[in-house]
Each structure stands twice: as C-alpha cells, then as structure tokens.
Image 1 (cartoon, protein in one colour):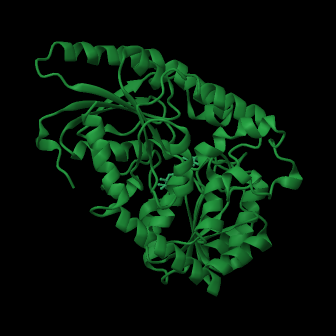
Image 2 (cartoon, helix red, strand yellow; image 1 turned 60 degrees about the vertical axis):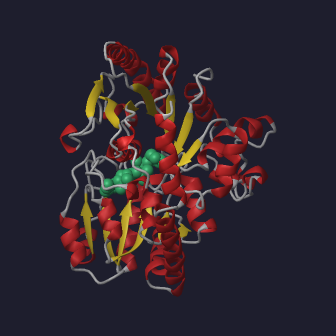
Image 3 (cartoon, rainbow, N blue to C red; image 1 turned 30 degrees about the horizontal axis):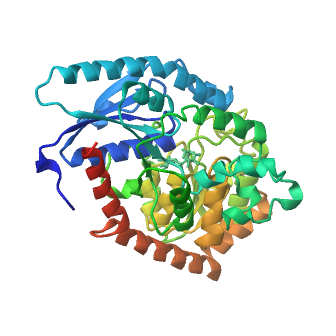
Length: 453
Ligand code: UDX
C-alpha cells in the first residue's frame, strides 16, 4: 500500500457522522483508516444525541453539535421529522465551527486544506461546505443498490408503476433487474417524496466525490448504473469493518457473556438473531419469532434491544412456559458484540433485518442468512442475499415457517450449499482487500484524491 505520510501534504478532515448506529460505525471506521495514513487530522462533528465515545478514539478531535433531539424522537415522531430536525438544529453550530477552523488556518504559515466528509443523512453539511467554498465528499452507508432504486421512483410514479399494486409486487422492475417492485426502498409515495425533498435540498452543492461502503464485484450493476448517471469520482472501499481494526463503536453496551456461551456450543449449531439498531417490532411478530425459535429445537442467540418490542421494556412479551424452554437452548441479550459473534465457529446462521452493515458482516464471515427486512435498503439487500448471492432465505414471520427455515439453514443440505456460496464470496472479499485488490486500490485512490483537493 502506498504510504502517504511522508509526502508532507497535510489535510484537516471534518467528518460529520449521523447519530444512527449503522451510519456512525462506518464513519468512525473510515476516520480510523484515514488517520492511519499519517497525513490527515480528523475531527468528528456529531450530534449530541448518540454521541461517540471520545475515549475510544484518542487521536480524533470531537465536536459536539447541539441538536435538541432525543431517542424518543426516532420512535415517537416520524423518522423523517427526526432527520429534518437534527439537520436544521446542527447546521448553525457546524457553520460556526467551520468558520473558526478556516480562520485558524489563515493564521498558519503551513496551511492545511480542509475537506468535509459527511454521512448522506447529514445533508446540512453539504450546504455549509458549499457556502464556505470547501470541498465535500459524501459517505454512503447503505448498499449502492439503494441509490438507483431511490432515484427511479419519480419515473415509476409518473408512469403509474409506483406505489406498486399488490398484484405486481413480485414482478421485476425491468430497469432495476433483479430487483422487484416489492424491493423498492419505500412503497409509500408521501414518505418517499418527503425524504427526497429533504435529502435533495442542496442540488447546487453536489459532492466532490462519493464513498460507498461496498465492493465492486458485489454490486457491479448498481455501481455501473450510478457511474452512468451521476458525476464525480466514486470510491468503493468496503467492507469498512475489515480494512482496519477499530475500537467498538456501539452506543449500547455489548454483553460479552454471549461469547462464553458460544464457546460451549457445537460448531455451526447456533442461529444468531438480530434485527439491528432501529427496527421496532410488535408483540405478535416477536411472539411468532419466539415460538419459531423454540420449535426449531436448535440453539440460538437472540438480541432483543430494550424497548424494541412495542409496549414492553424488554422481554416481558415472552409467553409463559417459553422462558424455561429457552433456557435449555438459547440465550437472549440486549446487545451483542456482533462482529465477534458472526466470526465465532459455533454460529451456523444469521437471522437478520439485512441492514447493510449486518449484511456485509454476515457475508464477510461466510455465514448463511435468514432475511427479515423492514425499511430503506434492507429489502434490496435481502434480495441480493437470497436471489443473487444465493446465501440467504427470505422468511415469512410465522412460527411454522420459521421452524422450517431454521432447519433448512442449519440442518439441511440446502444450508450447506448456502454456506459454500457464502464462503466463496468471503474469499473474493479477501482478495478485494489484499494488495492490488479493488477495495485496496480504491482506498489508495481516495487518499490521493483527498490530498489533491
Ligand atoms: C440502518 C439501516 O436500517 C440500514 O438499512 C442501513 O443500511 C444502515 O443503517 P441498522 O438498523 O443500524 O441500519 O443496521 P445495520 O446497518 O446492520 O447496522 C447495525 C450495526 O449494529 C452493525 O454494525 C452491527 O454489527 C451492530 N450490532 C447490532 C451490534 O454491534 N450488536 C448487536 O447486538 C446488534
């Protein structure tokens, strides 16, 4: 890998992270990598809600931005309202902070360039960068497939193909092969329209470049589509969690007891269940999940975030009788060290909501998956896993179906085949990350690109 530390050129990077776990993590991973190059100083500007832990990243400067939002806003108010509010509230503070940095640079004899890298949900940063004449790069933490799928919606709407009718949900969208109408990010026009309005509110400040936490070979056609339609360099540097070791970025405390529990289980015998950091599930769905796990007679490790089942603090929804049954076969925790869990030899399958980080983490460890997507890119990611990469099963959350799906994954020949496919992808990822591989080359290009700004 090229060493840029000796080039003498230095740059101040201001990274604007989103307060969502699945977005904060890749931003901190990117910052850790760029800092390791020796030519960047890193400031993490972040909202006060869900702020990162500075003690875990002693080399970074942290700049809190007062936001006036709280966790309950994500759940109680709409997600869109939450995004809009923290963007409005963070903007003036961020602008003030940048002006301070610019003025400090003016007084220095050895000036550093200032470059903004922002999460795509923190779009206020793009308009501030444009107003102050600073280059800005966008970090996309969803799958690349999300963007062509999101961008095509107005055309589909105009042609009467969106929102899709029930009868056509299973049909493939010809322009988005192999994705179906049901895989589109939102089958809800008002939500999609509002999100588009707010995220596209800065058309006059397009990013200087875009970074995708993905790999060329994994998302070839989506990346071709993006390159055909959008200007500016694109860096595909994923999977970020594998490029450099990064301290834990979890907002919730990781329950390490699950690793000692996994140590006692037979190889490939455990299904790991986690629906990510945002999904909220109703009691009926959670109860079906519980019965499905119990009836499968397989070992399981289930992450249930406190408050993630509507109307319950934690696991009080579990039907009487199941808790005792569970003790023999399973472990429930509030939050797990997920990457470590997926890398554990005892884990034979991953039942996931298919958030992009979880998808990449499962793929990187060669673990076949059960797919239960909720929103945004998750349905697209589930389609990749089941139909394109052939290492996942899309499930209907009903106890009988779940019992069957877990058996297919952990016991049947089908599961072994899926594991084989997953391990082939795992090998290709290792190649992409090694010297001369696509992600490694893209990282080098990214560093050169930033230093040339
Ligand atoms: C959100 C969106 O839902 C997703 O579709 C988008 O692609 C990114 O942002 P989120 O629900 O946070 O995702 O899921 P995901 O992207 O999978 O990120 C969750 C992160 O939390 C993963 O890095 C995972 O390792 C971590 N995690 C999850 C834990 O560390 N412990 C757990 O117990 C559960």
